[in-house]
Length: 118
Figure 1 (tube, one colour):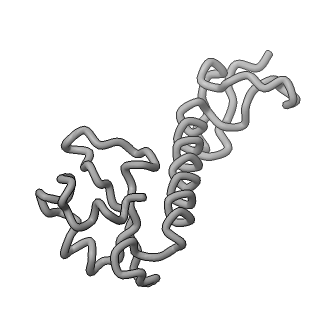
Figure 2: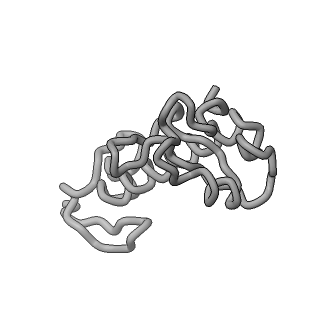
């Protein structure tokens, strides 16, 4: 009887309780352990969100329209309770990020960057 299985990602041999079930596989378990499966899922989710935000701003900086050295910037930072959601992310180039990205008036209605968040 099968009690241990090797994860295809981390290559560790673990007890089968650390693998999710998968009726489509021969042994009835996923090829990745639950920990690796979660990491892969979160990574895929982040890439998908990044692609959505880049598409929203046409792969260009929201301020100067440059297409070089782009960064996905949080309008409301994590430290202030901001989340990884589409409405809280904006595309900025390195220069605009340095110039505008960390100013306190960023979140105020008269803040220069807010007019680009449409």
